[in-house]
Image 1 (cartoon, one colour):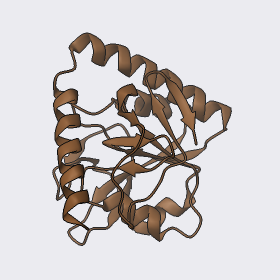
Image 2: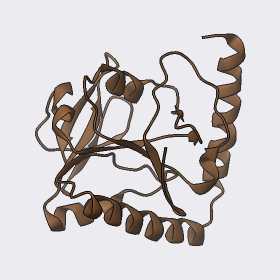
Image 3: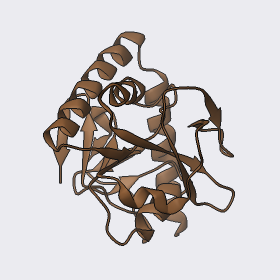
Image 4: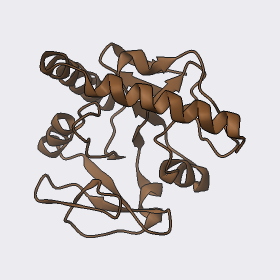
Length: 192
């Protein structure tokens, strides 16, 4: 990675973190309702029976209301569990107790499945710092999702869940960065 790209990513991530921290409670509630509605419509239209998603952190676009809905309709959901070696294991989401992984990310306490469990899902929802209009995703710098997506022989559609202003014209890019097929935002769904 060149120092220039690294510096660009670091500055952009800092700006995006600050924007997320300053969102009002009203904005968060409105965004959550919209994102949840769009995700429900999206999976219903595509008849998704299983998906990989993540348990959102407080400053992230909220996926938890959507995940609760998946449990009421019988959609199987796998949640990532970070490992020390930079790979992701997966755990079925059951809406019950939560724990944290080696990075402090929330995870279910259900059975731990290996990295290849994700190969059998219909859709993958990933977090992102931002995504550009060509579908290039910039994460938060750990590389877990880039490694996972890059290792899959045949990936189902991958959509990042972001706020509207995080769909940008371009993002700094490195060779290992993986694109997404689209984004889900409070404003709607964009497919690239």
